[in-house]
View 1: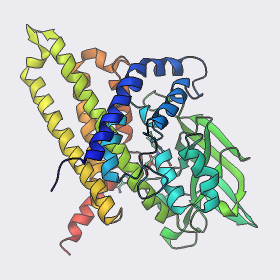
View 2: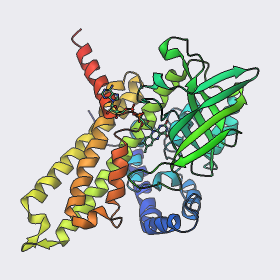
View 3: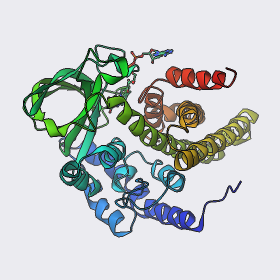
View 4: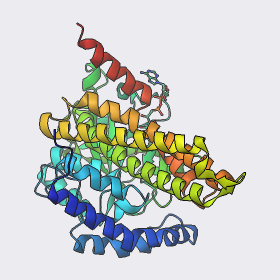
Length: 400
Ligand SMILES: Cc1cc2nc3c(=O)[nH]c(=O)nc-3n(C[C@H](O)[C@H](O)[C@H](O)COP(=O)(O)OP(=O)(O)OC[C@H]3O[C@@H](n4cnc5c(N)ncnc54)[C@H](O)[C@@H]3O)c2cc1C
């Protein structure tokens, strides 16, 4: 087993890190300032300024494996780069590697028709527009996607869409031009063949954003998470992806890569929290010695280091399995990192907050927001319990 990254990956790690040093870290305050001033729901000038620079530096669309439209990296090669980008919440967008666009672009690449690719994938890959994924509904337990009730009904050469969604992430951004919408085309079909996915342009008549949802008080502007009503929304029948009743097939394909990116990024978040914690405890003196010298602090730093490295290795293994045996065969590893990575990050960020004292819960150190975000990852794309159930069932299957 070779634990080393290839020369190609090492070189890219250096280039992504250098870009972060030059353009991202020095601009963290500017990003916050820009969002705080004026209309929060407009894209920042900062990101639009930096995107061409990342493109020029050849650090663009690094996420898309097995496609000539991507950078030719495997999931395993992309993982350490995604981790570096994840160290700052808005940085992935600068490299056109942010959620939910990466997952949506993969769907369009794998399941879209040539005209979908031309109309939507091309501008997404160019960073000209953004996208959202509308599955979750307020009225039903959406962790079980068979519950999704929105209807997609054929009417001549169109489909008519009705339903209420929430947690449609990214809909707050005026550049969000396309939705991948999940709903039932045939409620009488077998349970896993009722759902379909369809492309819905955001400017279609009948779509109303009812409100933007806060995450522990953060609105995540200009991205945001919307509650959205769809009333008699009509789109061409050709907007349907793959075919009626094939929504689950697409969901399986989407949640593999999309979700593993979250894990990689949150490992970057945990690394940064540990870094901040170490710097802080070395510089603060309490009861006659630096906080760093308290044994409880050493214990937490040691545990954090070990936990981050464990989660990273498991994530890399999942990425390796996805590359070598495919997302389906890698489902145990994918489910494991979905549970392990966010829980690890929450533990590390919590210790970093504690080490900062009351400063840790302010917005001064980015830790409170990092905690809020990591906490959502125990729900977004499926709650922990659902993944644990799957891991448990797969483990028990060995004894059939
Ligand atoms: C920040 C954020 C962003 C999101 N972005 C998107 C997005 O872009 N698009 C989108 O469609 N959705 C998005 N979601 C929604 C997310 O996918 C759902 O919240 C998630 O699938 C869970 O569905 P639910 O909220 O309906 O919880 P429910 O299904 O009501 O589940 C509630 C709880 O029941 C328990 N539970 C459920 N099933 C089991 C089980 N089998 N065993 C044991 N316990 C169980 C769990 O504790 C679970 O948390 C986002 C959520 C958040 C917080």
